[in-house]
Amino acid sequence: MKKVALSVLLAGSLAFGLAANDAEASTHKVKQGESLWTISQSTNVSIANLKKWNNLKSDQIKPNQVLVTSKQSTSASATKTGTYKTKHNVNIRSGAGTNHKIVTLAKQGTSVKVIGEKKVGKEVWYKVSVNGKNGWALSTLLTKGTVAKKSASSNVAFSDRVIDQAMSLRGIPYRFGGTTVNGFDCSGFVQYAFKKSGKMVPRDTLGQFAASTKVSNPKPGDLVFFQNTYRKGISHVGIYLGNNKFIHAGGKKSQVTSLSDRYWKSKFHSFKRL
Image (tube, rainbow, N blue to C red; front, side):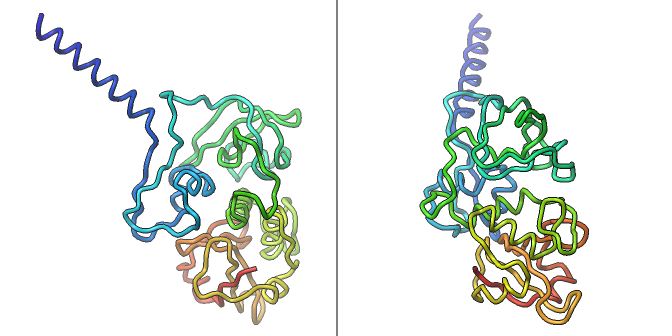
């Protein structure tokens, strides 16, 4: 009887310990070479929330720094259904992933009803009902809280908005001269991401190059320029993400590429800031 009672007591204690751990916030220990963007991708937490939950005043982080990667909750499992709002203009797609076609566009601040979710790789996608249609949206582009209008006083850094907007455009086909979600060329992609984040920039690559200032220590959200691709001189542009990666409309679609890629490394010209 004593052994049975002890087993029950231990089982109860273990269950209590698990429940207590579920209620605690998750953490991530920063490794050498990691950036807020790479941690955001691996944890499915927006850069804005990482900065908010860890009281970060800039994008700078250090190896061995411990970051909170989930908001502390008093319940073991938070519901993934209910009414959310779009943090930016969000493309609602026919399936969970940027390779699926766009069903409708939900503008910033639009209320959407979440009716399900699906994990695709390291990303979590929500099935939503909006504008009388059902589709899928990346979870990090939705929020339960109040959506602040894009302005200089916004708590979300402008560079974070640019990156979030650019990442939401992955998979859109490359189209020479393209400036819409039906297809982008490189400068059209940059112009669209900045415009949707609240800033107008020149339309063409040379105009963006002339309007920006060269920097030696690039930060996420800066521009990265390339030369001698399809023409002589400055001829291609993308948005720097940190960790030696950039996002651009290149090849067959808008995508994330490493600056260590042999072709792009040979064409690299400079980093510049608008």
